Amino acid sequence: MARHTATVTWQDQGSSFTQRRYSRRHAWHFDGGVTVPASSSPSVVPLPYSDAAAVDPEEAFVAALSSCHMLWFLDLAAQDGWQVRQYRDEAVGRMAADGQGRLVMAQVTLQPLTRFADPQPSQAQLEALHHRAHEACFLANSVKTEIRCEPALDLTGGVS
Picture 1 (cartoon, helix red, strand yellow):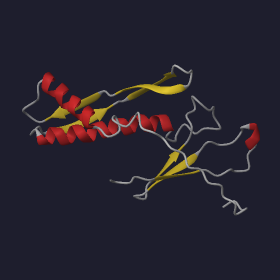
Picture 2 (picture 1 turned 45 degrees about the vertical axis):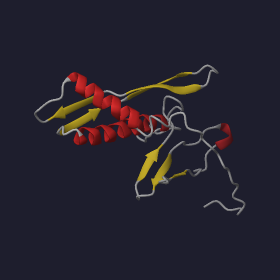
Picture 3 (picture 1 turned 30 degrees about the vertical axis):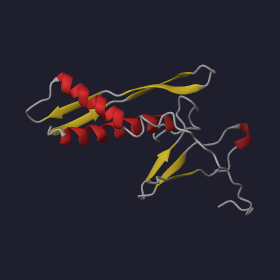
Picture 4 (picture 1 turned 135 degrees about the vertical axis):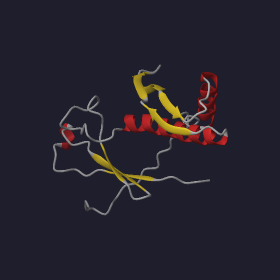
């Protein structure tokens, strides 16, 4: 099976860490070489301790679900002979408390708008394509996945 990696890095910048006045800005490094500026959401941690211009984990979660769905949709449309010309999804995630009072991503709504070359699929055909894409999407099928944490302590004594 394929293995996917991401390295997340953060460095203290001489803040008042124990008073919780430290920057939440960090970076996501992907195996293809792309680095993405990341931060907590300003709706969770107020400015200036978060960075509104960076991607927050909740946005990334919504984008990942939307992207996975789109990629499956495009593939299935191509297999069925439809000519997709443009695809745009303004996906929205909604946070809410779960049954234990924990804040969770309670709902993600995908809102894909697709442009096709002629012939156009009917609304029923479009909905069927999206249903198949949802059923095939790795991430939509993984939301209930087990998350494991295997921590280690750096005992080298220095901060790099």
